[in-house]
Image (cartoon, rainbow, N blue to C red):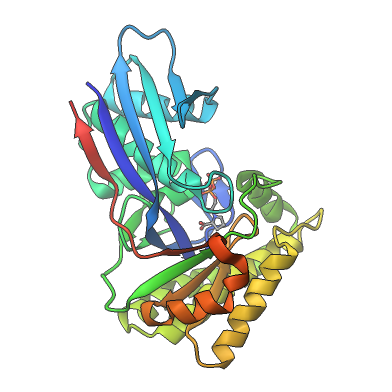
Length: 319
Ligand code: 2P0
């Protein structure tokens, strides 16, 4: 059989940063995200008895991929299949630019590989499987808004969809730098947990923020949603900065964009900034404000991308 699945990336409004179990990818805090329509990964998987090893191509180029093989081992263990697999991924996300391409990648791989192996996983079980590839992938199983419950163990740590909001949410991505990030988020989050004296404070406030975000979304209170979003990002980056060695993903343009967002807000424009494991800025806003924000950031020209909430992971083809 050959199975192709598509999963969209997501941006965390309430951040995931730090694992209490690196093997199972169990996080210290819950997180809340918005899945985006414009950025996605298509992955085709074919378990094949004729293969002597797993094969992986990314955007048509063969790659050594120990993470993919380790992930396929989980699918083989769950399904009882023993064959190696051919995996072909095409990323419609700028890879490693802080747009969390691992989220769409492992969500698409979880769906395509589990289906191709004959498994029919319910969404929570699929989210748990995707989590084992990359934490943020647990959330990309769903469209729109999702919460990843930190849980207590492998069984209880999975994402669930949140009710659809009536707010016309938009995310404007400002590509400050589309290059590869200097430090992987996996490595840096472990360093933050191990060395930042601010990390416990981040965990405490972020867990409260996740609950507050669920309430703010249910109340369609955009000001509160935006404040919680900007705060979670700022506190995550503060914890990173306070680690040893001190480090930040921010670049001068990251700050310039953030300052513009703050200035826009003082003029009454609904706009809040959030940054991930890279220098790019994502601006959470509402559809009617998009043209004003684009104008204020026109210096970035073609490096502005406007995304709307996107769909859940789906099987495109199985034959
Ligand atoms: C997030 N990020 O919540 C946070 C905010 C980046 C900053 O999830 O080690 O690639 O594979 O579980 O999911 C990026 O980390 O890390 C991430 P692993 P992942 O979106």
